[in-house]
Amino acid sequence: MLIADTLLIVLLVVIDQWIKHAVVANIALGGEHPLIPGLLSLTHLRNNGAAWSILQGQMWFFAVIAVLALGIMGYFFWQYRHKNDQWVEELGLALMMAGTLGNFIDRLMQGYVVDMFQLDFINFPIFNFADSCLTVGVILIAIGVYLTDRREAH
Image (cartoon, rainbow, N blue to C red; front, side):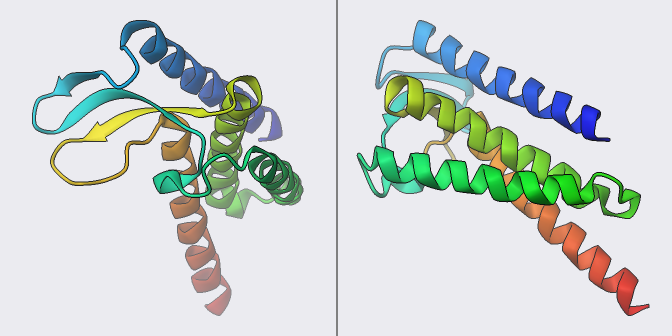
């Protein structure tokens, strides 16, 4: 599973970087392009903070957090490598690592993260593919922990 998970992480980081590059190349900064009218638009933004643009300009802080998070996730990833009954947690960690790496690359190379997905039907912060990987990864880990707890309780 370790090789498959590593390939998944690389694939997701490549997809994230490709989407960001396509948005930067095709949509002016601050510009918007509807994908699904009334539901989803692409909006080219730069975010030098975290979610909801908090902690703007704290590049050193995000670099330290990303390195620490990747180290911790890598440790758990390594621990799950032979546990077939914890594949949900392993997949969640792979998604979280990909999301962390995708945004970390942006911060190192550009000093900001490119965000683009705008939900038109709700007032929600604009986000990117890496953010989606992180969110789905956290949800999968929560589900995996729940399933493991249920399995161990029985």
